[in-house]
Length: 132
Image (tube, rainbow, N blue to C red; front, top):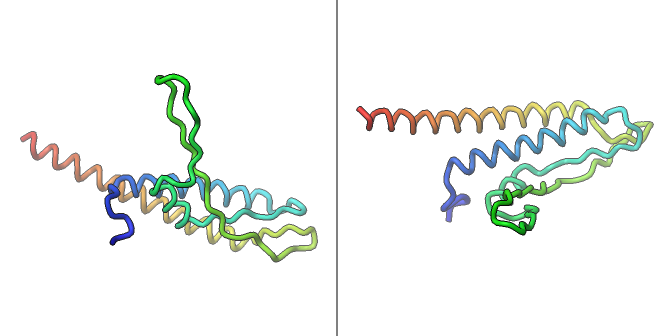
């Protein structure tokens, strides 16, 4: 059985972009706190979080009391590990490591966005061809 059997490719791309945006927030938070004493960085496992989002697990769903309420689901990230290395102020953020992860995550998001745009461009071209 394939890993994403029965899941639309557009959904995989969109959830990938959402997960990358969430990961970006955690990385930015870690970088922003590089000089904060006693700060422990949060590391998100991208693959586990994406898989949980695609499988519908790990979300926080709010109960609605009326049919017109908006559906809100917030996915909880899967965390990797805590940092064990520390500087003199007990801050465990390795700036070089966080910047490398930020660069990798930016590339991942850009790739998902480009593939999503290409997919919609293909659909648009197909519809234009049918309209002629």
